Image (cartoon, rainbow, N blue to C red):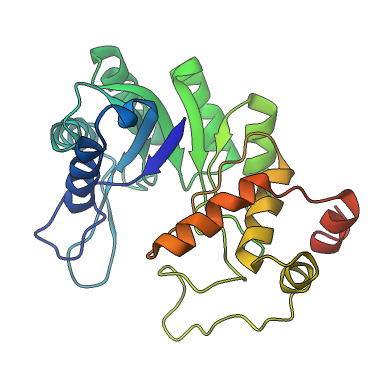
Length: 250
């Protein structure tokens, strides 16, 4: 199974809602029957008004309309995995999750995921959704390990954990603060990469995969070479001694 992660608000300009979803749909259509084993995961509940900020929209009516629009843009009868992009502090979390349950009941989406949530919210969603909740997508990387508690809970519950921006501390990404410079090549990940003759990014992704069988990192890529390099991490096995170098004390 191949996974493509996107969102309705992944766009360049404010008037391009659904831009990336349309690109994904075009790419899969061109791929033909080979796209049958591709799981497209999209998200709803956030917006980008064009001034550099992000908005949050967890109202059930908005989520229903957003999911239906995403399905239409993707050209599918039902979205494979639909994720709440971020809890809305102005809307009871249970109400937002209830909207996703209703979308699953209606057949608009097949599976439900959460993003940017804490352990208590995961437990609440689990009570509402039951087995329809299959994944959690939180920021997690060597530079941002603070959501390890959500990874541990996902492991215990058998939920897929999708770290976004998984190369933090190894590479600079679009979510880093403006002016962030490339990390110096003196981290344990860089040192081990030199020893193994691979890229630091491969070492980092292999580290993610070794943390738990539920981890599915979702690195971004702008170049085909980066995509191939990231994919190679799935074939890279790190020894316990190497993992100890990367995660001392764990």
